[in-house]
Length: 525
Image 1 (cartoon, helix red, strand yellow):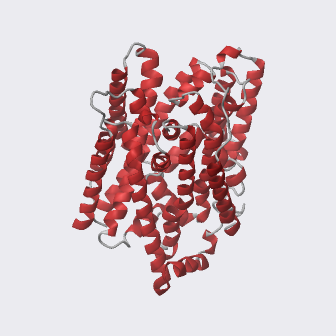
Image 2 (tube, helix red, strand yellow; image 1 turned 180 degrees about the vertical axis):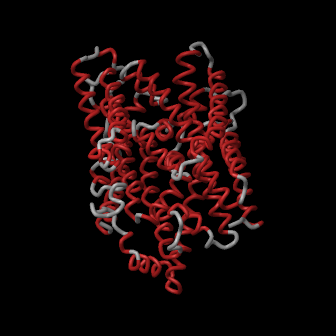
Image 3 (cartoon, one colour; image 1 turned 30 degrees about the horizontal axis):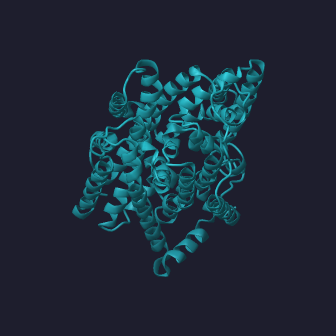
């Protein structure tokens, strides 16, 4: 598969336009210099549409598009639970997490932990998140993205790797989060449009003269085993998606940690002009999540009929791209690049935010002015992407599934992070000692389950393991908090004036999302 001149022109046009737009929205009024609020939180003025679009753009990248399409090919529609349950998680975060974060003027997640528990946990978690973001998340995004670019264009992978990383850096380095968030509506529009093109063309090819509707009916008829949302214990993929755990079990631990406690994601909502605006953004992202399986998973399932002999499931999406005619291939490839660039830029900005505000300003720059902190943020962003480009191949080049690399490392700490934030937000008696105990227990217990050599533990499905580790870590954190109580002054998170009441519009939209989710699971149970 190679791009024609028309396809290449479309991709170049996308790159030029998105770069120009980012520079345009990054401009400042005469005489005004960016401060940390401008650069890291977009002046706390993001509208709902930018928040919702940016949440999705930050979330969806090459590993989701290629990986979830591959899972659709191998497993079926059940993999869509990652998207559909995220829609419900966004509602919970919008209603119960954001009121506390925004009321207390939170910039970063480590800052919240310091105000709630103390300085030690802020330092520990800031360093941990920086290591995770640079060496796991950022490297995997640009590595998998470079693979996709190489497959389509034939470009040398190392050049593709460096090109993606440097372009993402350059297009957001001037404007920070504002440049990322206000251009993400374009990125998401392109992503959705490109995904719908592939979905419609693949279904149309299956349906023949009957069109898309006939193609969908034929796909369900000929691949019925790929249209079950809840897998039975005898399913060969049960260990990946263990039945009811996807709706009442361990998936909640991963979702709450990712959407509610992750700087990379929640930073967009923290930059809202108001709480209602942030909540509208979460609703918008929730609706976008409902349609993501159509543009990502469905083409993978269609490949079961159109390309039944693939060597690897992850070849499903690139193979379906080969069905595209000249011109449309350029559009869909531009959409794939948009997803990679948006996620990379978002991750770079979050790394710069945590390093500048939680490490540099706290430890080295107490007297630094706002302009210096913005400069430090830009330097941190540049260093982070250079490190990621240099280490991506050594870390990921020998792995068959880079997506599993992400899951393996982040899954060790996800239960502990969820424990820390749930206790910090909703249990006043939680202490720093308890929170640190929960975090450490999460890692040690996860390592025991994974590498302890006990067959009964290692055979437990990943999601169930997260739920068990979460429960044990939670009990330990509560026990230590009760055994070593802290003074009232140690908790500087104010709950006075915090209201969890939401507008009628939020409630109505949330009800629609929940009804749609019930209908989807009821239909494809």
